[in-house]
Image 1 (cartoon, rainbow, N blue to C red):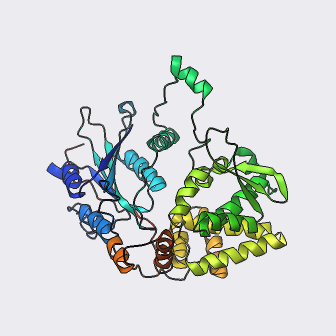
Image 2: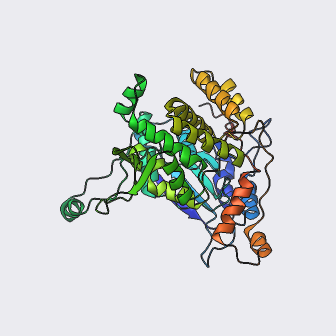
Image 3: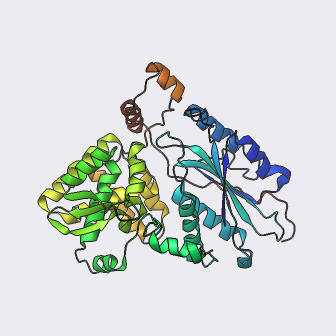
Length: 418
């Protein structure tokens, strides 16, 4: 089960609650570095780190008269019948956290202080996006829960199924189906597309996916996204108003009948996810110089019909997104640490990114962002939406993020002979 709680105070209180009486089994961290790596069992004040981040970004003050939400608290409780061990729970919690909150500071604390001693995880998500500086928009709890159930099933664990409606609810459901996405996966490749790719044959769905992924990675607003897709030979239109769920329809301009909805490619290609992303200033993984290089290469590849280069460019931006790297040195380290066959693909993509100058050689120094109050005071208290996007764009050109590494604390409890 997934339980969701909103926090409106400093994270010190929840930190004390989760760690008091030495009851924490272990802890994992996302985008927070534990400075005492030589003594991981020692107490680590992650609450101070979160509070400091919120303050530096000006996200610890009320917004438009509303009480500020400082953090989200998620409790992941596996089915007791699974009798899950702590390592398996940690792997599940870390994977789920990285999929949904990869740009946020997060502390994950594990307990087994319930009636049957079943391990469960407490996930504390700070309210500030480290990439954009914006506050956490409350994710759809149903989508988060569905994602957790899917990941549990993939690991052989029990998953809760929503009860089928009956009676009046069932009749209402038939008259007006619920607006659910066709998939909850961020990237969803169907079997037909994968079979064509495995045989080295052309897939128009994969072609559209590659072009949309490239445009998504470098666009900072919806008009820019649509214009770039048009340059890359992809049209964007709204789906039918009679459809329960709003989405965009992508099609190749020279083959209008080759069309696919965004969420059929994966949730991260759909209108709902992309509108939110583009409103906040875009993905911001690639610096300005790299964005220009990506656009130039993509346009040239489309003009001459070089689909191989278009596919390689798409793989490069996909790797930058998923691995959250900000320099070529990060890509080299990623390839060196990967002992699987994927290391060869990573090395190829890294070589291509270096040749195309998509990323800088070294990660730029991180520049602290001024609090919102200071920025507004400097502008006379009238910061427009355009100015806000400009500030984000200027900052993105001078900052970089290390790939999120989970710093694990060892079991803090005394050995009880288990």
